[in-house]
Length: 257
Image (cartoon, rainbow, N blue to C red; front, side, top):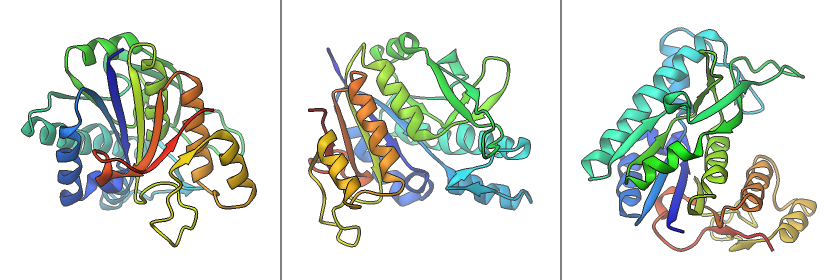
């Protein structure tokens, strides 16, 4: 199987000109097939404020009402996505920006209301892996925005980590996949105040023990649970690292023993 590197980067990285340029330069150097998934939350919040639309968050997740959906569609599917695509094209990378509605590559359903009504937020139900695999085999580099659709004409705001994980799992039937989640630290840390205390390797057993002892907590727990799920679904390797280290060794490598 040919190798494919699928990288997810948060909005913070792609929203600052200097860090975006660094990311695109590093991403362009990665050999072989590749896919980039991006966020853009801070830009969406800033644009909403300029338009007089209040951004509401619950547990770090955006409540997406009808007006907010318009804003995130403009920002994620438009401004942020196309800046990345244009930047990659300038570096000789044949990038193609996509939302889940494009080519019907990712279908989701509106999240059911339980304790919180998140509004127009999608939970992924289906990935059209053959269409993505076909593009990738033609040396196209998909740039995936955090938007999906329900195939009934509605766009849905969708977590970028989820899009990366679901795309990686679906493409594992076609490629030998390394999934990389990038954030502001060098990896999963033993001590959050020590940037060099990176846990080099995590197995399910080690993960459990670190959660029990409180070393791993908060938002990192679901991120790592998603990583282990991806491995069980056929993804070869998951790496959590800093965005400026994607073309270097290091970070936390997650393996399924």
